[in-house]
Each structure stands twice: as structure tokens, then as C-alpha cells.
Length: 96
Image (cartoon, helix red, strand yellow):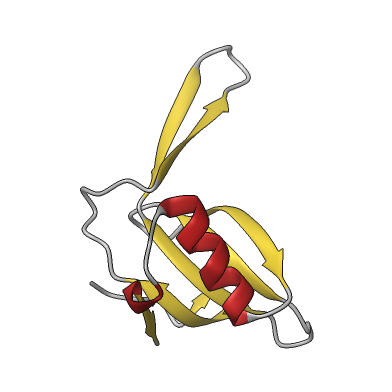
């Protein structure tokens, strides 16, 4: 798996090694024409923007495109959020 060093201009600090066939969650987008588009979230990353004091938990698709983010005060808070939300273990997270 090729882990990007940056996502949306933020430095990737940690990530989850995940089989692309395992889905953490699904996001449904409604298109202008009334149709819907489902995106599978299969990658997670904890990132930090250079000028920010906050960390972010990014929810990404198999191509590491960010579809949602949550701002956190610390890496520990982001890890704990992922454990609670996605039934993960802290040992699932890897440093880049």
C-alpha cells in the first residue's frame, strides 16, 4: 500500500493499514441530477496542518481521497475516536 505523505495539504502522521475490501463506513452523496453516489471509506489517517494546533482524523476512500474529517485536540483523541467509532485497536495505527 502506498501511503501519501500529505492529504489535502496536511502532513500525515499516522494511518491505518487496511485491506481495501474492508469498509469502515459508507458515505452517500446526492448528485444534482437526483441520483446518489456511494463512497466506501476504507482508509483512515491522522494529519496535522503546519499552521494549526489541532489534529484531524481523515476518512478516505481506497485512493486516499478525503471525504470527511474531524478536528481533534490530540493524536490520542483521534485514536480514541477511531476506536470507539470503528471498533479498532490503538495497535491498528501506524506512524508514517
